[in-house]
Image 1: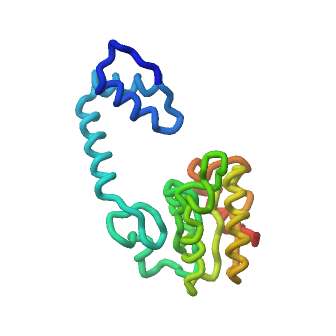
Image 2: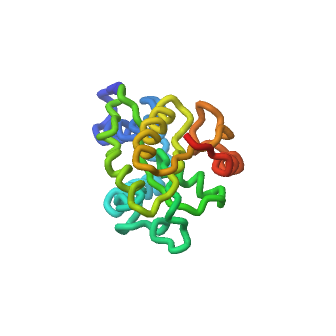
Amino acid sequence: MENSSSEPQPLLALVDALRRLPGVGVRTARRMAYHLLQHDLKAAEQLGRALTDAVERLQHCELCNGFTEIAVCATCDHPERDRSLLCIVETPADQNSIEATHGYQGLYYVLMGRLAPLEGMGPDELDFDRVLKRANDGVVQEVILATNFTAEGETTAHYLSEAIRARGIKVTRLARGVPAGSEIEYVDAGTVAWALMERKPT
């Protein structure tokens, strides 16, 4: 990070923290920091409290690995969800996009990432043993692989498909209604809904 002796340490620490957000470089982080401190101290305080509250209160759901305040999230605990369907996604944002279609009533597993060996993300880091155990609970009859259509997402889907099918469980993949190279979080709900309906065996 660029350093400037004219900037006090708390400001440098704030800029460094903001840099950790995806797509945010030093200049953008510094601009955000100055904006908050110069023009919106109330928002800065709100942001600080919200982050602290989220870190202290959120945990991973015991079943789907998504974020929740309790051991089992509301989605996994919902009595009307179809427990025979398990949709595997990369992130909570991807899960939200699928939920927005209102066309899927099964359950989820959130990987919290994707296979990316060059970034140090392998099967162990993503705890694939836990994924396979979840899929092989004796209730799940179909696993829908809804990882992104990026190189890493495709690799992740292929790896999981092979491992899950070896356990005698039906595996399908989102149809190509989702454009190649795209991330599900940014695809419109109608396209995601169509991809779900048109999913194919892997």
